[in-house]
Image 1 (spheres, rainbow, N blue to C red):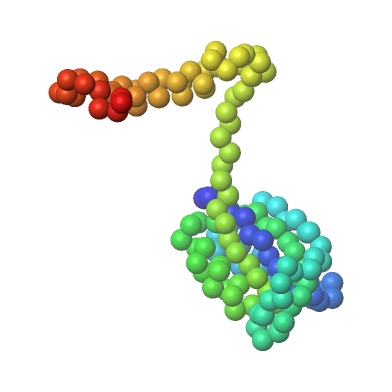
Image 2: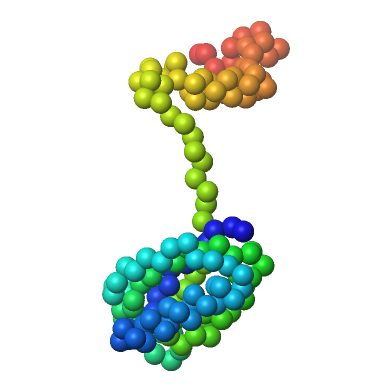
Length: 149
């Protein structure tokens, strides 16, 4: 199952109501066969511009980040359920990118650029590309160079 990240904006409400809204969002993920890795509370933050959701204008919201794993065919069901929830001002689901664990050593970085392995690979790629290009030839069939006066 891929890992997803969801910034969740909930309307301003009292703490018990906020807890029930978060439980509803978590139950939706659990009911679709997923599990939650982490929930981050970012607090009440003013929105960059006023937002209209479910007939109300919101100028600030409770911000949460939810990291979860769920089957990819269930994401549309989760989005549909969250769009109908009146406590959710805005939510979006992003697939979290796996970071490439490229190993970098201090010794390689301290080498001068022509001796670094990644720069040498780039230089080989450029040589291959330039090998396929046509070089300018002065032999154009004329007895003289046309651009000299």
